[in-house]
Length: 285
Image (cartoon, rainbow, N blue to C red; front, top):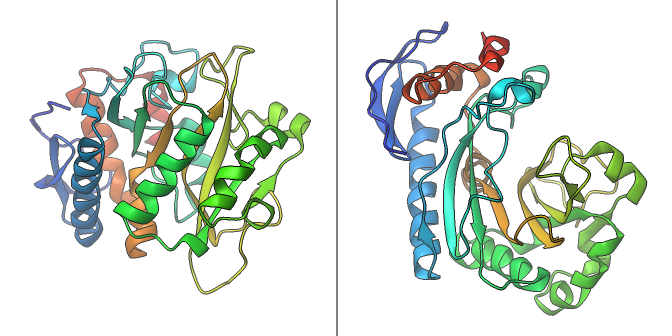
C-alpha cells in the first residue's frame, strides 16, 4: 500500500502509530490490539498462500475513487477490471451504507478485501480455489461453511458434492428476481453500480457460535452466519475470481473483532495518506 503514517486523524478515538497492517502502521490506545495482531497474521498467511499458488501481489488502488456520485467517492470493492490475471490484491474499502449497520458486530468502517483472478478459470476452478484456501491453508471447519447464490449455481453441484460440501445441504438458493433487484452480491454482483451487467456469485458464509445448522435457511442469514467472501462462478463482464474479507476471515479464525469506533481512526488516516477526502467520509464523522 506504500503508506507512511504522518499522523493519525483524530476522530473521537485516540490513535498512535504502532501495530502493522498491510503496508501501513496503526495502533490506538483503545484499539483491539489482540485483533489487529491476529489480523496482521491473517494478511501474512494470505500473502504466503497466494504466493505458493503462483499468484503475484499487486498494489491496491486509493480508497478514493474520484467518482463522487457513488458511495461518496469511496472505493466499495476491489476493481474487477484493473486486477490482472494471475494476481491478487489487498484492497482497503469503505461503504457509506455501513454507517446504518454499525451496530452489527461484523461491520467495520474500514475493511480489506483480498481479490484474486486466476488465469483461464471457470466457476469450478474458483470454487475449488476458495474452499481449498479456507480449509487447507487456514484450517476452517468445512462443516461450518455454507453458500448463498441463485439457481445458476446449480452448475457448481458436482464440485461441491465431490469435495464433501453437498450442494443440497450447503447452498441456499435465492429467488432470482429478488437477488437481481437487491444487487447485493450474494447471487449477482454489478461491477458498475449503475450498470446492467453482472457476474454470478456464490456468497461464502461461516457459522460462528454453537449452532449446528449446515446452512442458512433464509436470506439474509441470521447473525450466527458471517459472510467471509464471494466466489465468481459465471459471467463475462469481469474475470472470474474470488474475494475474501480479511477481517471476516480473522473473525472466523479467532472469534475476535474490533468495534466500529476502534477502526474509525484507521479509515480517516488511510484517506489522508491517499491524499484525498471524498465527500462520503463525512458520513463517518
